[in-house]
View (cartoon, helix red, strand yellow):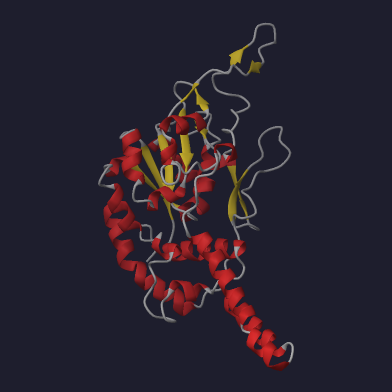
Length: 342
């Protein structure tokens, strides 16, 4: 991949440049420095991020243009106006995982529902910002009226050991949504995102396996996230299975309306978001939202969604499938759902 090729090219170029023994002694420093920089950048990508400064978190998403309980202003021919009513509440439901599973798509689809108000950004409260306190967390939330649901999504919660205990401390009645995807495809997608941010990364195989095609390296986050059964074990210490809804990332692409129907049922909402809201974008390989009445164009997710995956040799893919198979089967048993990854 780009990382190994870049390092090899750097070494050859340095040894061929300049003349004399002094140049020969100095030359190896350049590729070593480059390798150190690439490794440092990778470590920054792999390590958990820090809590952003308070001013860096965007304001809550604006209310829908036509809220279901809009106030009518006298003398304005019945036009709805902003009332500023409602209050900030703790989320009643959280999308807690998983990274590169389809969490952003699910949140955007749910925000079509008039009774869902969701924070657009990922606050990372229960993994990075917990020391700021619950009052700070609630202050981030959009205002809601009675009957509306407050939500946020931070997919790293699912793999954060402290998150279940902290969320339970906020409210043991919290509904938890986990979007899961074939862990092999998810790991490759995760690597593609890392590679887009750090082009000099080592190859996928170098990171996923020890000593060439040796044992799978579960210390690498892209591999570790896919051990869904292990992560769920931690959550079930604090929440019963009935508090969870597991959404198939594959079906969210192939049948978004069907998966959204299950989510709306789980949240106790009327099925407002249906197949009439979606069309399939063949270029991106993802469903997009049809344009709303009066808007200029349909709405798809950002450029980072549907990003092409790097080529991974089939032998590596098969090794990973075999590695994940027992974990997948345990996850199927725990959830009572067969996601068909095997």
